[in-house]
Each structure stands twice: as C-alpha cells, then as structure tokens.
Image (cartoon, rainbow, N blue to C red; front, side, top):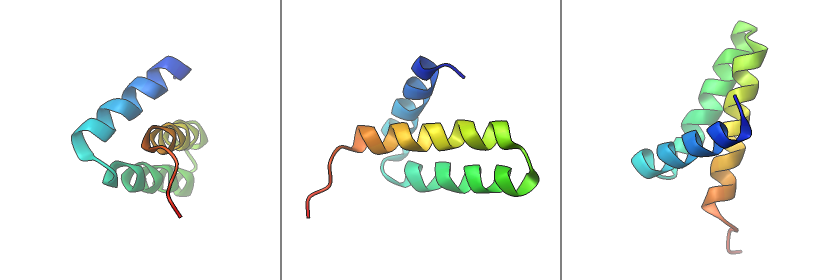
Length: 60
C-alpha cells in the first residue's frame, strides 16, 4: 500500500472509530504476525503509526 493510501485509510478509521481504531489496528497487525502474514502485518503497523501521528502529541 502506498503512503498516501495508508494515511487515507488511517484518517477514515479514526473518523469512524475514534481513538479505539489504534488499538484495533495493533490487534490486526498482531494477528497477521501470528499467522505469518508479514506483509499484511506491516501494512497494519503502518496504519497504526499513521493514526498515532493523526492523534497528535500527548499531554503529560
């Protein structure tokens, strides 16, 4: 998946599901890793990272 597609997918998921979308992306990545599907896992890790960037900095 291209970087633009990753960002678009992340943005859409965040709009629909809010912050819980990050946890769901991480869960999907882990499941793909357990199944040995490295490419799909990497895609979901990239989507997770894009959602974290969209979330912005966290206050301490």
